[in-house]
Length: 145
Image 1 (tube, rainbow, N blue to C red):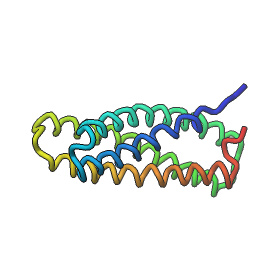
Image 2 (spheres, helix red, strand yellow):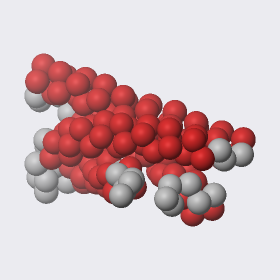
Image 3 (cartoon, one colour):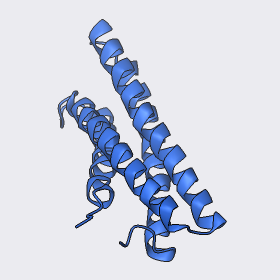
Image 4 (cartoon, rainbow, N blue to C red):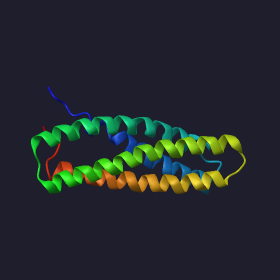
């Protein structure tokens, strides 16, 4: 049985990045409501799961290429793959920089605001990537083996 793992794994980075953004906004709005490092931990888990989603997505894209979809579908797959890779590498890079600047000066709350901005960017990227993935699955029928 050839069960595609990508559809099961991709929901984790989507949910974790979006939740990290919401929790970071809550922390900035009411700093005593939530721990300051909760969003950082969520982004760390999202980075790990985005690597897994990228790896399983590459495998599923290879299988989709063997089926022989038309050029429009393959272009959408390539766009989905590009933005997914940018999201995965962006989450890793933002996490490393966030931990570095957080540990460098723990009292500087400008780091929290900057993290919120980058989490917002990642959230937008992951939402667009998930839109493309949904288009591939539900409109073009890719991944329904």
